[in-house]
Image (cartoon, rainbow, N blue to C red; front, side, top):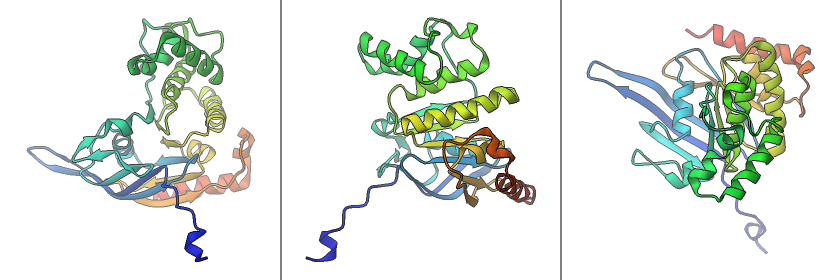
Length: 270
């Protein structure tokens, strides 16, 4: 029997970016924010994206989230185009979960209602929404706070609600834009550990934008570094530490070497 008959079809990448670029045009000027971004991300992979301020990290994430159409190139989620003729494919974008730096919770909704909001918009019945909200509240460490309101929560707890809400529809891809940037150092460290635990528990594929190199290395299976505008990929660094990772891994010489090398590369960019 020919070898080809034994071969199984190769599954598409979870996410694939092919020649992605983005221009912003005004009457006065055209600004090239991103140029020729090529990247593939596998199922269950955690990819951190770093770069100087203004390099296009958030622009890239907004394009991946279906919020900003690329000027050129293609974005594929499990082989399906996210954008078609500058219009987002709603059936593809519905498979994405997004978390921003601001938790953006509705202050008049309880924790459970905030978590279940995407399910309510989707038309799931009340019992399904309640069950999923309680399941996710426990997953993110908020069991017992389901009836609380955002004003009663700390910043870290509000971000946990935002993560739970993004996971409510069981997305194929979780996109995160500096979700811990406004938190104090100790809370941020704890949230790094919690996010790692949640990603492992759910098997989520994560794209994580951050300014913090240490955070990027601690969380990522790979760290993608962008150049100053127009943002291009200058380096992709594989991080080989086993999971789950304890915070003490950051004190090791290999971890420190990776962080220093990435920092030196950023410092060397004009």
